Amino acid sequence: MRISYTIDEARSALRELRADGRSVALVPTMGALHEGHLSLIRLAREAADAVVVSLFVNPTQFGPTEDFSAYPRTMEQDLAACEAEGVSLLFAPDAARMYAPDHSTYVTPESLDQVLCGASRPGHFRGVLTVVAKLFNIVQPDVAVFGEKDAQQLRLIERMVRDLDIPVQILRGPIVREADGLAISSRNRYLSSEERAEAVCLHQALESAQAAFRGGEQHVETLKGLMMNRISEAPHAELDYAEIVDDATLQPVRRIEVPALAAIAVRFSRARLIDNMVLVPD
Ligand code: AMP
Image: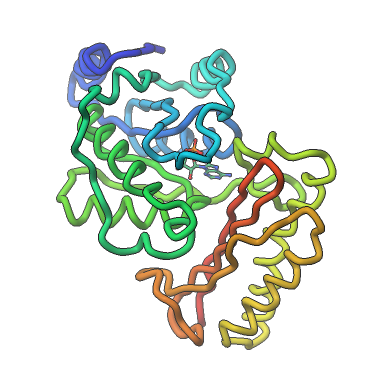
């Protein structure tokens, strides 16, 4: 496995990787790799000849009061994990190499970002889209893989690729969960053992909405009520949002008549966790 710390090094490693017309799949990450990331790497390996993983804790997607400096950094383990998964190139730049001191050009979404995490984290998706566009330009992958865990991010990236005609195919990776249903996240390590036990409430809230929906309940207010009730049973959980929106437009819906995205964000003392499920009518 090659490791590149600069954009020039990555470009020259990529020229070699692409020899003989080999295809390249990119898996963008912020490191602290876990089974969720590894599942994306495995999808990438099936989709292309060579896999590039980027590992970059992107400062522009963190708000001023968020956990940028505390974000877990586990470079050595990440390196070993990528090696074991057959990754060809690990691209691990630092912020000074990714952003010129007078960087001033951003990709700003004009829709899909006013709701859910976009509403709670102003500027977050502008940072995400900007860095993903930069990574696409640096790596020029044939395929890029993103997890369904970050449902709004995935839809915004698909929209950016469509709107800006970026020549890359986006693959969606299913959410990988712990045995009790908690979606695996680098931020789960911030949870105390009490909070960890309670954190299953996100998945259980989504499951209760899904069960009612499958039982015939189509009214969003009722389904949202079920989700909020389940979250309120967890004493350390502070609800950020529990929403059900049109899966394609992320706009509010009153009844589920087309696929809908049920999405939840909950704060514990140090961790803000998200989860989601798509509800598809028959
Ligand atoms: P992050 O390192 O948190 O920025 O995540 C990098 C990629 O991994 C994103 O595309 C995430 O959606 C994806 N990801 C994170 N957690 C999971 C999970 N539990 N299952 C599937 N994909 C995930």
